[in-house]
Image 1 (tube, rainbow, N blue to C red):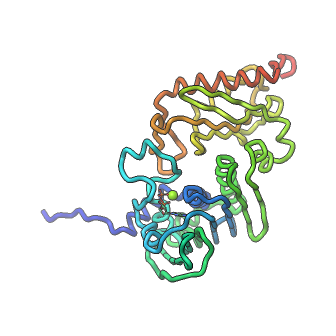
Image 2: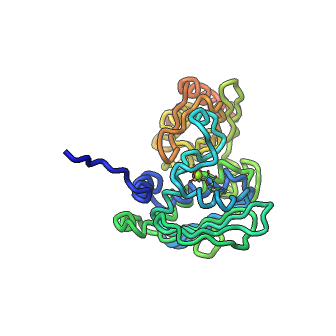
Image 3: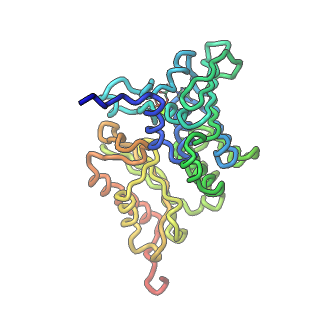
Length: 339
Ligand code: ADP
Ligand code: MG
């Protein structure tokens, strides 16, 4: 029998990986914003046209890339953020898989401009469907700008599967909120179809929440603080009377990364037991800091799930911290006849 196994060409492998990393325009937004943060930017601008279907651009004032790195950044598994497997448990960056730019460039038209502080000029690269179209010298400010145009242009099934602009924009704004909430020490702006939708100056956490969700949010926030050997908790829960029928405003961040956890969500729900009208959900904005050695974030390509070494302890600490805060603010149970 003849041998039949072949290694897939890079552009095919990239396109397969892209299927996992990039589900919709909002996934591109997340990856680009995270790269800007990892680059040490202090201000980050997101520009969107047609809910990201035509254009997604992120401009940062971070450290930029050298001419060679700019080219390498589009290779699969090319990263400056980890060197070996041990580093996976010492992560201080959002990225580490080295596949976002390669994936995005496999399924869109991408233009990257970047310059490092010490250089007079920068470099600009145009890539379409994993092929480098050009790399030129360019005059550009310090930092990096990545434009992603015509997402899924070469995967019609995916492109047709995209939802209406309203729905895709909602997903983008959700992603923008998550990143902006995780980093109130950075300035963010969002421009949608040419008009400024958000302009978030550097601020404290309460102010950032208010800037995003509106002035009225301020009065509903109850601070939560806890500092133990295994876990630091800081942030806010919403007063029970402001609970909503939807789960919209529920944010968990672990080491400044937005995380979905049904288990920890349950810990909070149980702290609110007896305080909420049935069918409503408390809002929360909580940051958990844990030793990176005690978590595994490499569970899913989008990195929104996490594996904790000791989930049960976190559950108990979180529940008691939230209960304590609600108690301190004299939030009494809702009486039965009020339900
Ligand atoms: P990862 O973030 O997992 O390393 P990416 O494909 O997202 O993988 O990026 C590849 C590399 O390109 C990064 O490790 C980084 O060195 C570089 N890079 C990407 N975006 C930026 C940026 N905005 N500023 C500076 N360097 C960047
Ligand atoms: Mg990345």
